[in-house]
Image (tube, rainbow, N blue to C red):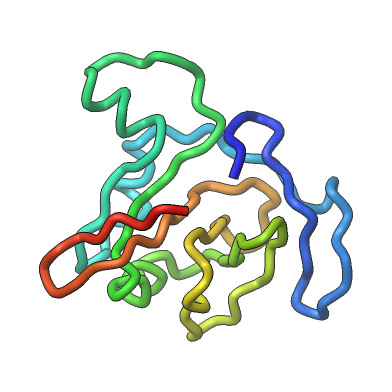
Length: 142
């Protein structure tokens, strides 16, 4: 998925009707500290991913970030979504966004969830789903 401030996808809403680009909303350029607050009740490991992860490693901001990526092991996604009560989640896959119904887990082929507080049009987090084998993180190559 391309990175940048113009991140939009063709989308499907819960009734499977095509959604217009302007209805998708915009990305909140949140800093990593906000993820710490948002996920303060998560009982499983999660981490900052993407461009912010590189900046945190370098201890400097290299560019303006259009979004905030958080990595999670797929096996732990239920606990992370429970920590984000009051949010809505959309599976991002193959150029489409599909609402993830409350209480369900992402489909196996989905590796990204776009998340925002209910009632807003501003995306707060992209959750990147990573695979694991027991205690080992598995690299997934697309």
